[in-house]
Each structure stands twice: as C-alpha cells, then as structure tokens.
Image (cartoon, rainbow, N blue to C red):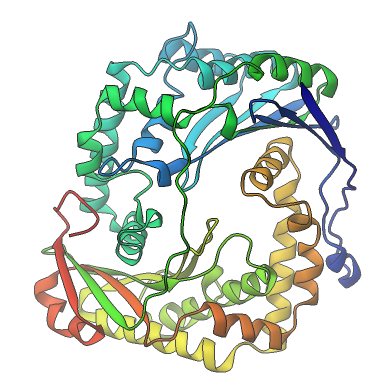
Length: 465
C-alpha cells in the first residue's frame, strides 16, 4: 500500500523592500509518497526550464561508522559512483557524461547523500542510474582499494601542504572525543587502512536500505508518472539490517584544554578554538545566523577586521557553526605565522569576549540581515536546490516552517534577542577547547598558558593521540 499526501505551499521571491524581506521565501507545492517499507518520495513539478534535479539521502552517515572504521560511510558513498548494475566504473561515468548530466555521492556526519542534475529528456536515465547505485552497486574489490588508498594519500597531502583542510577535523575529534560527532567523516590514515572489501559490503547490507531512504525529485516531469516509476523501483527494496545509532546530546566543555599537533619546521600555526554549540533545529536560528555572519561568517566580519585588516596577523579568520541533529560545535578558525601564534590566539579570545560583552550596533545588524536575505532566495531557485531542501527537511525531521518562516525571523530579529543568543551559544573564553597545529618546539611553552596540553605529531595516522 502507498500513502500519498500533498502540501500546498506558495513560492514567493525576495524583493528589495523591507516588507518583502520580512515575507521571505516559501517552499513550492510538493507531493509526498510514503512506501510501506519506509522509503519516502517527494516530488514537485517545475516546468520553467527543461531540467530535473534529484537529491537522495540515506540516514546514517559517519555516525554509523563502526568502531575503528571511521570513513567507512564516506568510502561507500564514493564507491556508489564507481559502477552499478551492468555498468563498471568507466561506463557508469560515460553514461552520465554522454548526456551532460551530473551525479555524485558523499557522506555527511548523519547521512549519505546522492545529488543528480539532468536534462528533462534524460530523466529516465537518471532514475535508472539512481536505482542501480542504491540497489545494485558494484563495490568491486579493485575500486575499494583504489579509492581507499587515494583517500589516505589526500590526507597525507593535506598534512604536508595545507593543514587548513584538516584543522576542523582535529578540532571536532578533540572536542567530541568518545562521542559520534567526533568521528572524522572522511576517516583517518589508520581507520581507512583497516577497512577491507568485505567490511564495505557488510556496511552496505547493514546501513543502506529503504527504511532510511528519502528521494526528492524536482523539475520538468510528470509527477504521476515519476511517482509510479520510483514506487515500482523501491516498493520491494529491503530494509537495512542494523539499527541507526542513538545519539545523545554532547556535554559542553567546562574549563580549558589544549591539543598541540606538532609539525616540525612549520612556518605557520593553524588554530581551532571552540566548544559545544547547538543543533539544526535551534529555535533562534535567525538570530544565530545574524550573529555568526557578523562575528566571522563573511569577509567583513569582526574576526577578519581585527585579525587581518587591523593587525595583519592572517589572511583568513572565520567562525564555524556545525549544526547536526544534536548540539554540534561552534568555533573560531584561523592561521598565522609561527612567531605571531600567541598574539593571534589572544586577539581571537579578545574578539570573542567583545562579542559577548558588546554585541553589535543596529547598522551592522541591518547589514547582516540584508546579506543573509540577499543570499537566501538564490539558494532555493534551481530544481537541484529545491530537491536538496525537500530531502534535508524530511531527513532531519523538520517541517516547511523551517524555510517558510526564516525570512521573517531574520527581518524581525532585534538586538536584544541577538545578544541573548550570543550569550547562550558562544562560549565563555574560560570554557574552550584549543587545537593548535604548528612547530611545537617553538610554541609549546607559550601555548601552555591556555590549559593542560595533550600533544601528538602530525605524522600520527589519526586525528586524536
């Protein structure tokens, strides 16, 4: 039996006036089809251009990685692109390229996602490829080895040449040590090196199935025909064998502690300073987005102004918000010359204290609102973007108000409510986790003032000691 329901929602663009900014955007109509095996299909006809976008999510992701096998979900996601059904890796890629389509898979912290974008005339091919990827992936031993070894090489290359790509991985691993949110999504040299072909196949059987599947399709197609096609393809698909892990909300860090990652000879230090933040469903998301935009979420932010423009200590500084289902992390991320490591970290702490003590003037708040709302509508324009939004809402248990009410919430946010959110979400300078990556011999003694040090070498094949 198939249960079908429709949501009737209007699509409204953001205009330049204050009133229309408050009105914001709302999601278009969508049809939702729920199969008996738990699969959810979401469809919306969008006929303005001859394109079809699809977003597939499988709840689970990196938090489902077995103990000592971080990166397994990410490895599986990559392998879904390496052949499926009767096509090997080369012919699978050729089938996509021949029609000018795009199809990619990736793992996130709590889901595996597959994104597709095809011409409307090739929608049947898109569906065929998606069905094969999900139900008949090749998962060949040869491709497992190739992709696993490449992932290890990429981590080593980042350690050698661009540690900025890894500093947040070290930061979240240290902050959430022992919690699933500390799992490095793409794995480590150690965990990836242990993953066998048999384990990839077992993970697919255990954690991929109809009971955690969401398929969202938006574009130039007939919804009735697409509903029938997808329902027929997935109605009899099996459920995953293993249950999803139950995730407890992590406890915030009390006091300070430091992870020092030694990279001998490094001419720069990279640092991540953070604590536990909030989850995806945080009620005052609009106020938090305004605060974060002004603190370190855009090039003209407080962090950039103080550390780069005024002090010349760095080329880049930002504030990071990681918002999974439960409380994620909030952090300051930057880098500087080795000799200015302490000056840059101290200034970051001063800026954090200023954020909490002073907040922002009304004219800055207004500029942040305009910045956020100016970018918001263009992110919900294309078929692929809308498909991704529908899939995310369903996957994370959110309703349309998450989108529909956002513009008005941003426009209506006041300085007092924003300051209240700042004090609630951004940690006190006394309660922080520090990760500093650099030449330990030159910075060890000075970094010790921030708290008890745990030390490891960048050559260690893990992201924790």
